[in-house]
Length: 190
Image 1: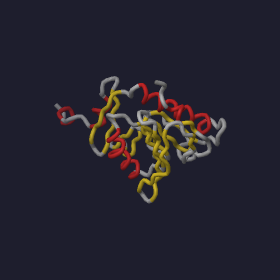
Image 2: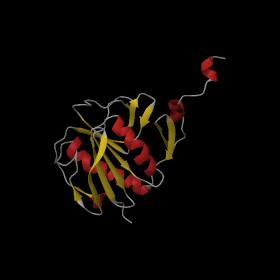
Image 3: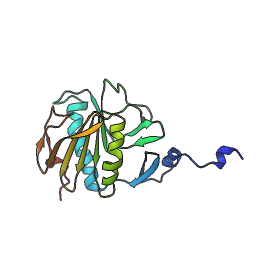
Image 4: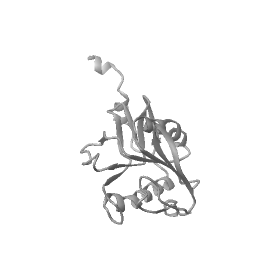
């Protein structure tokens, strides 16, 4: 029997073998798992992606020049620090092509986490510092229950709040201030 067959699987090997319906991330050397998002969570993420892809990815009514990706597997350190935000965005000047496999090795300029009761503390207390450490320039936290959007910009390695919006506000928020987003469109109908 080889030494490899006797050893424990790596965290990434464990992540790759998660059952269907679970999403995994390796954050600060620990494997975290969570079920697929709830309906309101998915609705919010999909709606925001829809609002951003036209103007920023396709250049329809906006500047273009971006990739906006749902749930990319960010490899800040290959197979070791693996984060999966709800959405992420890259300027094409930094990421000219989408990777052929599932690993995104270029740090995105923007990430968005849609908060849920089961992930909010992880998103705020674990993932936000990781995003800052690796130099993500902008982060949005959206809460579909409270109907809020918090926007942050990285300055000197520290997050600075650049906006807090609620309800049905019309917002223009960096790095996507070239267009106005109606927050009402992000909340699932009740």
